[in-house]
Image: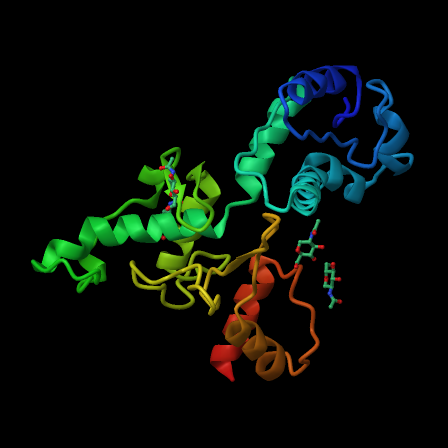
Length: 255
Ligand SMILES: *[C@@H]1O[C@H](CO)[C@@H](O)[C@H](O)[C@H]1NC(C)=O
Ligand SMILES: *[C@@H]1O[C@H](CO)[C@@H](O)[C@H](O)[C@H]1NC(C)=O
Ligand SMILES: *[C@@H]1O[C@H](CO)[C@@H](O)[C@H](O)[C@H]1NC(C)=O
Ligand SMILES: *[C@@H]1O[C@H](CO)[C@@H](O)[C@H](O)[C@H]1NC(C)=O
């Protein structure tokens, strides 16, 4: 098993280069020997190298795309208009990981536009507002796989399953580890990903011009948990589990 940078990747890359494309491949920082799996997958016998596994699994693949787009932009003076994925075998799994792990603000905005288009006129007036969001029956998962034109970049992209998940959980509101509703959700039609110049949506995703998109923690929610519930403003919430979050929200309510 290899991430890339071996005979077949170079073969595919040379074909694309011949047609004028800029191409990139990565070894994900691990062995390029297809039978060299055992060399890097353990830190010591029986002890998995989780970071190397994560790099191999998805992180390096996304980093590779970001770095390549950034190099292309600095060399040609503009970002690539279209980006394509090519790979076989392991490459199929990698492509699925990329699509599943890195939804973009564009997708979230497209779902928001679709729910407004679907429920706007339920009150008889087309004004871009959903007057009764609870009566709006729109399934974000019906959007998965649909292609649309991202107005931010002018590039066509498809709505991924994780993007629909983000919309669904944000509309539902947080549910605790034992299935209890912790807090209210956002009304359908809310700008989940934030808006231009004020990207403070509840499901904010910040994308730089090189296509690096990362989820942003909502400041008020995180600050509340850190400063008032944990009483430690520097507490690192990155690895908070659903159980941990449920417990903090419970403490918040009790206090
Ligand atoms: C992407 O953005 C995140 C957050 O700003 C940053 O930590 C990370 O280093 C960036 N990755 C790349 C490959 O530029
Ligand atoms: C997408 O939108 C951009 C800008 O709004 C436009 O220039 C481009 O032609 C559109 N592309 C498609 C495929 O509709
Ligand atoms: C979407 O949210 C609803 C309400 O919380 C939930 O019942 C449903 O299971 C969610 N769908 C998926 C596919 O997660
Ligand atoms: C928070 O934790 C994450 C994951 O453990 C780590 O990558 C990050 O550097 C930490 N942030 C700070 C500010 O310490």
